[in-house]
Length: 172
Image (cartoon, rainbow, N blue to C red; front, side, top):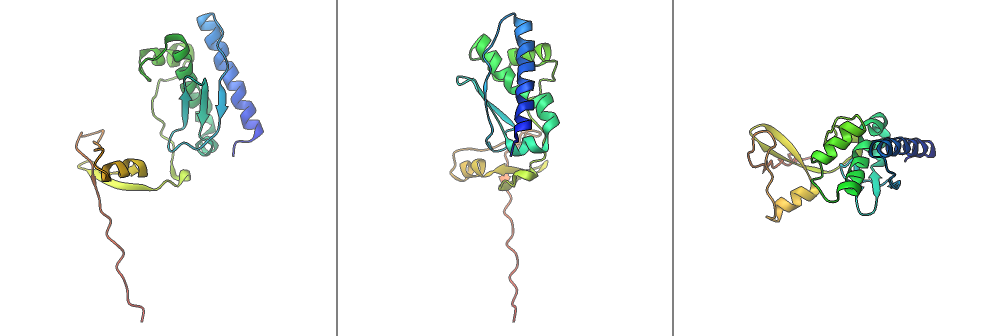
């Protein structure tokens, strides 16, 4: 789904980011391996010990500009922070500083991409704020009694909305 021209542009963006980091820290860093695999709702993922980032090909195809301005710097920041500081909070002060001071990016931790193109199955839960969609994985954890989820706005426990089955009709 990601063509060779896009891969070239991604490599160019990575070189630019690594050049900025090298200048800022006065040292070089090894370039990461880049993979392109679907990964749920994650736009990108950094694999710290492997020095690898994974980019979601479907979300990339629908949000190219945001990938170059936000997602790629976000994942590169994770790798560089690990190489400089070791294990720290994933979106802690070191990561935030890398994003803002080194790359001049807002240190946002979540994307707001339309997930419709992913065609993910979800289950509807709700609280007083309204409906919330949970992934199959999270729904299964609730069903097994292993997990409960809370609303990010009001803090209330999410409960499953049971959809009513379609009424059956007699055709004859």
